[in-house]
Length: 51
Image (cartoon, rainbow, N blue to C red; front, side, top):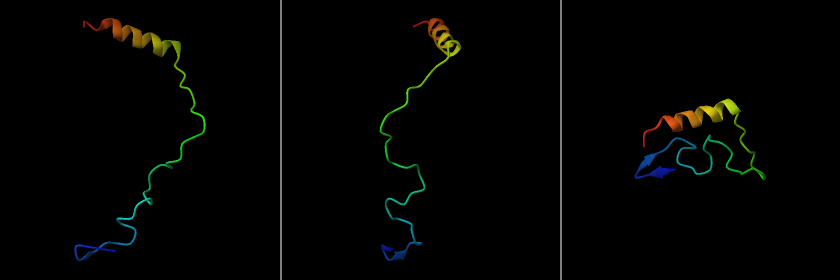
């Protein structure tokens, strides 16, 4: 592949070949579950706010 007269290494500049996560979406999302201790810490932090 040439771009402005310069050659690119093979594979560079091609779409769809990135080494990222699979773009396919799962059929059903999974719900997140938070512990009571985590929820309490969020409420305590919110109560500590002044505004």
